[in-house]
Length: 453
Image (cartoon, rainbow, N blue to C red; front, side, top):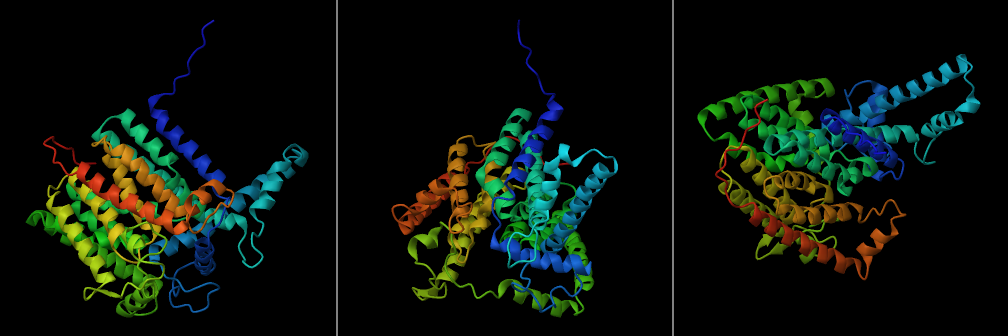
């Protein structure tokens, strides 16, 4: 007898991969809860209980700390509590259905245990139940899956379906992606989605939408501001493009003005002034914060970035280096087409993380994602990208060291000396930047399709 091979229809391959990735991430959500998530829960619960964000930034009574993140991401924290409400209502409804129809709790005791577990308080010193914190993680998890779908569409448009599927699987299985979303609960995927789409729309007829998406990206994570020079330079390609960008920018500013009126009792200027102080006045002057970059290699812990070197502070040296990286990225990728934008985005995001001061580990996320997309055109890049993604994941795990059961990973990062390992990994990251930038430096004469739909 010959066994039949079950062939999955092509249209179902991607949905099946996405479903498996979702189940896998859901299984990780209870492993650990970062302190950042607990702080965000405080903000989200306030928005949820007040049923709006009006007065959110003006409120001065907080359990852990004042809101220091943009409006859009803060709204998502509140929405996370709404997700918990929906899930809890759904679970209770199922329980009532079982009871009313005399199906018997003895047959499915696991469901009742799960419902109790989902609504059990995790920490004695915090008012949040497990399901609320898990629901906050569901938003970045869904963002992870949406980003995977966008990666698939882009890779398929530039290569073929098989290669696109391969790239998506690599992204979804890479430790950095599920660690950020399912374990840490960070939202860098969401900001990267809108940043990537905003820049790609510069090659599309709907260019006026690009500034709106760019503003949304910053409204989720303000770190996207560092890409403003690149966005502006590509916008100045010709008068027609510039006029469309101006029109889109005016629409984006008007929408932001309306948002400000909806969430703050103060006038627009005072609201923005106070918001800027809350987001950026953190007194964080250290040259590095748990990152394997240039400053980790040459300066010690808590080194003040305002210290002078050759008459210029470390912080200004970082800006100078970042400016040179921007100039190089643009001069070597001037064409208004997909690969030029992607290469420039990779160089600036990776270079900025390496050479600017006060960087955090998560700020490398955009570089890792764009680097993966570049492997479609530059296969030689793939091995170096794998190293980059692994070191990025190790950097995410370092310092927090959760889950604590990953003893081997912790030992790797601290043996024989944590400082020595960190400096070695910093050298690796700097080397990767120059190797990968060199690989993608050549221009291609082939015609590259733009994203038209």
